Length: 116
Image 1 (cartoon, rainbow, N blue to C red):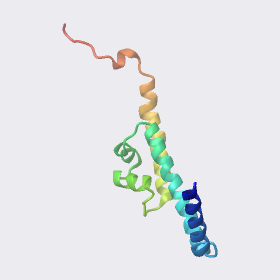
Image 2 (image 1 turned 120 degrees about the horizontal axis):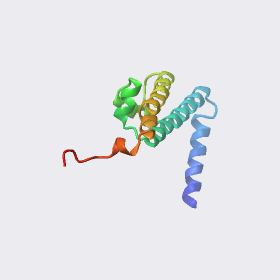
Image 3 (image 1 turned 90 degrees about the vertical axis):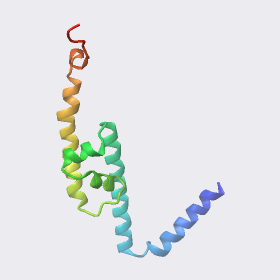
Image 4 (image 1 turned 180 degrees about the horizontal axis):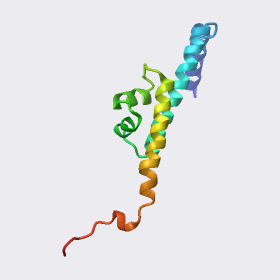
C-alpha cells in the first residue's frame, strides 16, 4: 500500500514541477495519451480479427514495421492518415475474409479422400 502512495506522490510532484504550468507540455502529454489509446485499440482489434501485422499491412498499404510502431505508440508519421488506413483495412478484412468464411458450408472446409 505504501508503494502506491510513493508512486502517486512522485507522479504528482513531477506533474506539478514539469507540466502543470506549461501549456506545451500539457498538449504533448495529451497527444501521447491519445496515441497510446489508439495503439491499444489497433492491437486489440487486430487480434480480435485474428490478423497478423503482415495482414494488416497488406490491407492498409502500410508496412508491418509501421503497424508495429503504431501498436507500440512509437510512430513518427501522420497518425490521422494512418488511422484512416487502418480503419479501411479492418473493414476490408471483414468484407473479404470474415464474412466469406462465415458463409462457408461444412463441405467447403472438409478434407475429402480423392480416388479411394
